[in-house]
Image (cartoon, rainbow, N blue to C red; front, side, top):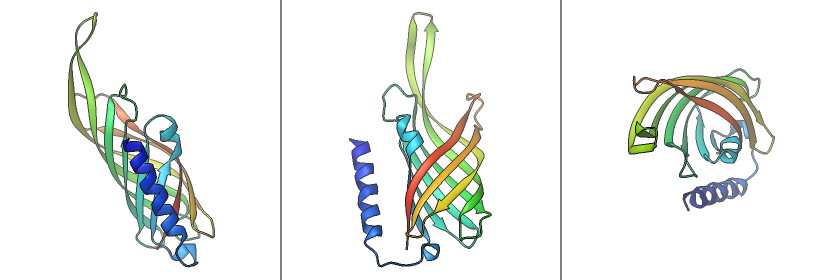
Length: 171
């Protein structure tokens, strides 16, 4: 049900952005995106990005588990990007991010199976690199890869930052 609500809201906002008067896509300052790769992996991710100048942007990504078997329940990830393209906020970029995530863990008592379930919050920071492509009508495509590390001692692993995203730039 949550997936349908998020997809419906994203689709509605894309149609509303498409109905705006024609203007130069490089003059638009807001973006809504969906990560197709994470969606295929049953972990939908949606992003909003605000362009701050010719070569910078701040954004936030939100993702959640669509499958009850995934222990990584949801996350909120603010990020900052620096772009190196000729067109405003396009081309190669470097990203610095932080993540707050809800993680489900199991306390194993013996080898007979999982014991008690606990859920806790994890906080970490990471980096990514990628590329953004912009069409003349405002459609966006991105590809990126990166990694982050949680600060808690209980988590000896980090989090991935991967994506193949599509979206729309609007005023």
